[in-house]
Image (cartoon, rainbow, N blue to C red; front, side):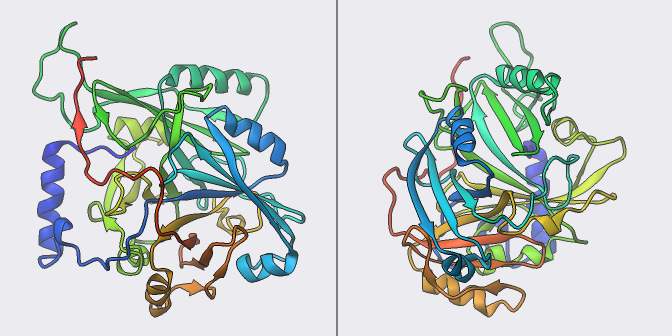
Length: 377
């Protein structure tokens, strides 16, 4: 979703040095928490069979399930309803990009639901695909059948500014990414397809997925505020790296303009965070700088839709102590979640909620070094 040319990346590095002379991006003083990339998207659903069937089309299968009483759910999530949870995984990728479905006996509400792009409180999950045009055709047909889906037309862009000095012909082809969004009552998607480059570990296409898609690679959050200062705990308490200082994006960026359906003259604040232990599982935050609908009151655990995300760490108490030390954050005690994992839940001032899980290892190790490869495609 976010794209910078090499020149703009250099400018950001210079800007950061000017703003924070003792703390460059490469030298952020992060606590060594061992934190993962975003482990799970966690969402409430009405009908578990329909949800499992839907996400199976993208390659997700159930790998675990559990049920807890209303008393346990209240202690864990502050929701007075019995809960059945299903953990879904895409292919063999178990280090990030999973999905957890919450089936509440008594949901607290219908969630943010179908809404205009960049509605405050909305969340979007991003995945790689091998056939973005097919996905666009499918959702367009569903919309024509009067189902609540709003797909944006896929648009190609130069993600890393790699084509500016090149002259192309049939044999020397441009290096691009094509992306689009699909807004829905049930879920908000972003899809992307790469052309001419490959990044190992950032989107692994599941060969068994009917729609030729990957795990979730990154996650978009639309929040309210004047700046990104309220998110500083992501670095100081969780150990996530800020990819760059907060900056203003707008309608001059053709990819985001199409994906977020920006009007002329529209801008938003943007900042991204990534784990030092995984190039994937990124977080991307947006603060609209023009009036947008605010449904953040429905972005709470117990409602339908995406209500929180999880990370895992090897030493849960260390991270719990760091979170408790930040008086802006509200955290539960450490306790076992519905899957028997030591965990705690906390929320911030912007309406984001997280579950931190203690996990010592995964089977498929994440990629830690970002490396681009250029096959002749």
